Length: 302
Picture (cartoon, rainbow, N blue to C red):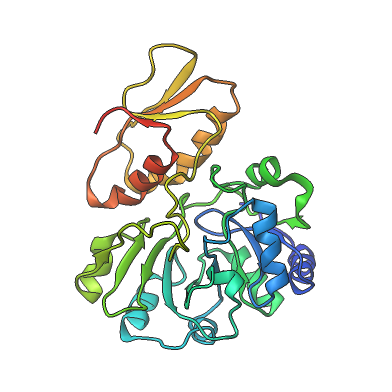
C-alpha cells in the first residue's frame, strides 16, 4: 500500500496549521482538508471547489474526545454508534459549539463529525493538532476522487499538497445521521446502512427535501458525484459512442470500492455517454443507488 512518509505528514500538517489546503486519503474518498477552526482556511475550500456556501462540511477528528469538544451535547445514541462505527464511514450531526465557525456549517446550528478509518488521515489530524474540515477533493458536483491522481486531475496546482495513500477502500462518501433533533434522521445513506443503525438505536427517519436553503448534510444537492460524460442509469442510448458499466454479481462493498474509479476511467475515454446497469435494490445498496441517481443525466428504467 502506498503511504506518505513521516516527513510528508509533518509537511502537510504544517500547511494545515498555516491555513492552507491539503488533500488526503480517508477510507471513503480523498478529502480536501483545512483547519476546521479557521474561517479563512475553510473559505478557501469553497473557493477551490466552487462549492456553494449552502453545503456544509464534515469535520474529521481523531477521537470521540475531539468530537465532543466541538458539540454542545453527546447523546447516548452517539456513544453507541461511535463505539461501533468509529473509526469508520459514519458521520454524526450534532449541535455545534461556538468554536466551530459558521463557514463550516453553512450557518446552521449543527456540525457533522466523524473519525476516519485511515492511518494517513488520523496521522494528519494528530500532527496538525486540530480538527480538519474536509469535503471530497474535487470540483463541486464532479466525481469524488478515490486516488491521488483523481485529485491532481480535478484540482491540479490549486492546493498546497496531496498526500498519496493509494486507492480508498470504501469508495463512496460516509453515511450521515443527524442526532440533533428529537428523532434520529438519516441525511445521506452510505455503507453503514440504515438497518445497521436501527438495529442499535431503534427506528430512524429519512430526510425529506431541504428546499433551497442550507442543506443539513453534504451530498443533498440534486446533482452530485457526476462524471463529465453524460451518465445514464439503465438502458443505454442507441446513438453515439459509449460504454456500459455492468453489474457482475459483486457485493455492495466490492461494487462501492470500485465505482468511482471505474467512472473516472470511463470519463477519460472521450465517450458520448456512460451507462450503468442498475445493481440490486436491497438495503445494503442504498448508498450506491443514491450516488448513481444524483450522478445521472437520465434514468431510463427503475
